Image (cartoon, rainbow, N blue to C red; front, top):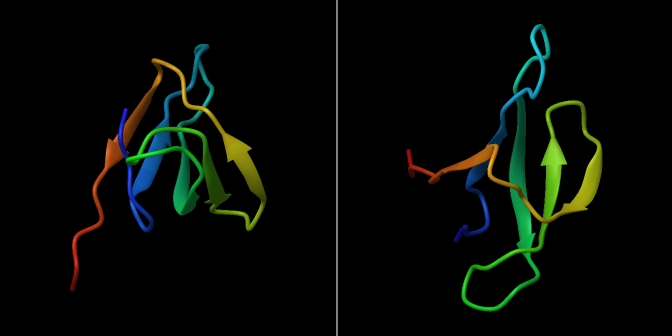
Length: 63
């Protein structure tokens, strides 16, 4: 997985009824876009994330 600052990570729910979580990449801590990433979730919570197979990257599209 490769991501850049401002890309969005969509973490899919793992069980029935669990919603997807969306986080914005605010810092890439790995080399060449590799994990881990510092991310900010929609509620403002920030954490360091090493995404699993249930996560996809949505590239940032400039306005």
